[in-house]
Length: 268
Image (cartoon, rainbow, N blue to C red; front, top):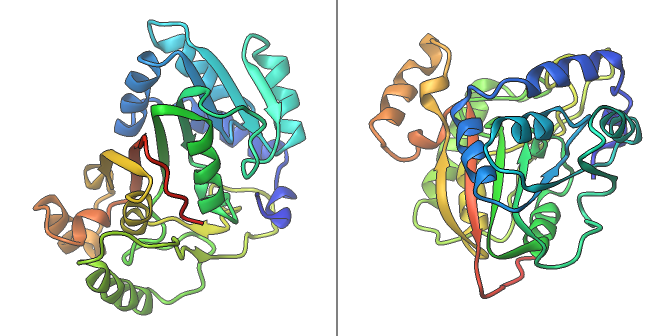
């Protein structure tokens, strides 16, 4: 469930920026998501906001899947229903999805996990409503990477870099982990700007290790090719592009495409 303080930032400025951001389908993660949507019959957008992204996806692909969107924010759902009446929008909690088991071919979440308080619970719910071999797609900023921070982070860069790198070395030989341990941050209370409502710092490495228990990982990337040129990141980027661990996991964004395993092993 989203942090209540973050919810207060939902104003007209937010919806203007959210709508604008949802119009961009040029990022490699969006192109991959489009292909997966085209191959699916029943789709759920978790954290759909005011519905722009799911509507644009439907308008772009060559098939006509049955699409659903869910968001905790009442105003967002009201806007979505008014703007896109042909899509099934529901106000609801991502931690307790109001859908039956084994219903969707594809569940995706784009730039939502950085706002969640309990991402593990949301993933378990997404898994529940997926059909066997259905796909869960998670796209988010890679704020939890040792070389990155969210706008709301108060941690010193050097401290996070050292601590994160050591943690990656510890995780090197682990097959899986029982929880994500993503860092929590406090959203800013001023007028909304991009990512000022971040409450959690997602990290690709721990996401991969956590999801290995109950999903087959079909694809993942941290999108180093999308990183802005920066002297601070240059060495890490070179190492990342050379596929050297853990640096290939340190890019600016994260995406995982997860396939629901037939055998269910609860991780909570």
